[in-house]
Length: 178
Image 1 (cartoon, helix red, strand yellow):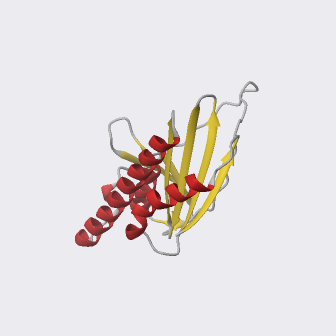
Image 2: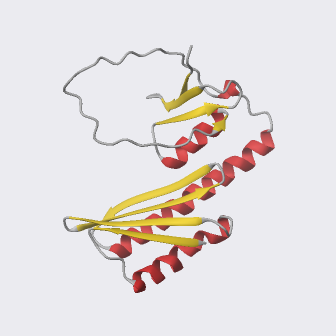
């Protein structure tokens, strides 16, 4: 594993880097050896924010914790990453066992939503990312791993941009363009 440390509003010292590498190294047995780990530390008032991203083949594991001290933030981040990896690998095993994963298992929702233009809306942040071809099942797994309520992806079957999202009733929905 290769580590990339970044500090925002603070310096990252070598002794903390060594401790973080040792603790994050607990997940090394669960991920490929050539993976790169991105660790970002920020100081916000009297608290520390730690973000760790581990890009895997077709997946991104990510954990973010805000805590009063760096030690507890580090422990929490490693625990979150371990849970994500175990959950992801379990789903892959379950999917291989079933081997009949179809799109019918995901609740479909075809909706066309119009957003009213309002001059008072301000966009504070813009994110850019590559759309990877995958099916809806994979998109739901990716969304759950990231802990988001929706996920934008390129459908591998028809090469169109789709969105999966978590509904209020706990089910999943799929938005397809018409």
